[in-house]
Length: 387
Image (cartoon, rainbow, N blue to C red; front, side):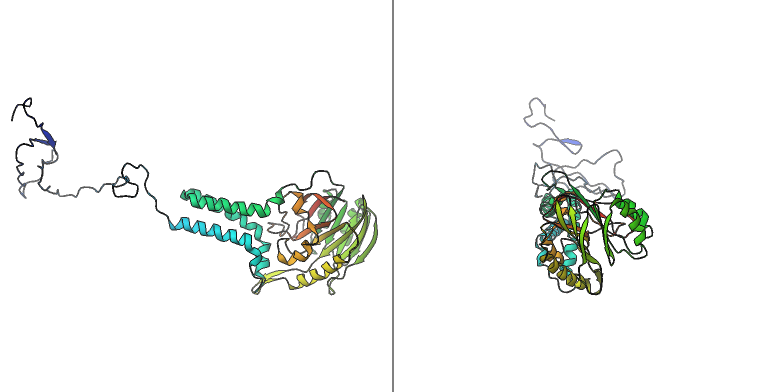
């Protein structure tokens, strides 16, 4: 070999040996089939020759790096993730849920009053927001995260006011409680203790039976000396009751009354109402009797001449239900101004909707809350008012 100091072509290392590029390549002879390959290292392979495979195939490369032809391109360090079906599904769910929130009034009520049923459970659509957001973060999908946040903004626009204090400041001068005590309540005495713990000025009860009435009347009369009882509804008051009568909204039942209470700043018309029950079954959301009775109640309220009006009771419907719109368009729910959330009251073990209500006209709510569960299947609801 020529002297390296005079050789213009340095030796080139190829696969374990050296080769002079100025000399023609000499193919390496193929090993005899009977001779095993050398255990000491890789064979020498000259340029242009074909490698001889060993008895075991060489392992496939396992590195995650992108190829030159991949969309990530050369010099990129992050693998390319194409759009995945799961990301599109998350976006579709967010869009559909948002449309339900915004356009729930367009859902038809036939067949089966499905629109009313949807609106009764409408607040629970908010559960989709954290679920979609968590799924989007797990998948690292920016579009899905944006869709979930937009859905949260739509939900907040509809319901955030229930968590904000809209009373305008100032304390209450009247505390009211309403409770469907359940005709089968096993412990009326404990129920009364729960109600009186709120230090109420007015207590309205529904589903009182003649047998259970003495258990309620005794302790309530000692704290609230003025009362009226008609059918299965009753009202106890700290202030004098100067008038009372039955309100005939359902000829087959006696479970609504009107009383005129001389409140802390003048007369107050107080209605105690228990509307007929609704059922969810094979035919849908059965609200027919409730809606008919509601119509009669609205006509009675239209004839009311008192400026200050309270309506307390079990309406068997949520204020989001379009079926109650004739009533909620005339009276305001205390949840809209009290700032304590939804105040779900039924069923008592795990409330999913609010069917027990305190509605007002000419009166300012300052607070609204739900009392602890009693022996009833409903929870009591309470409110502080400036009346």
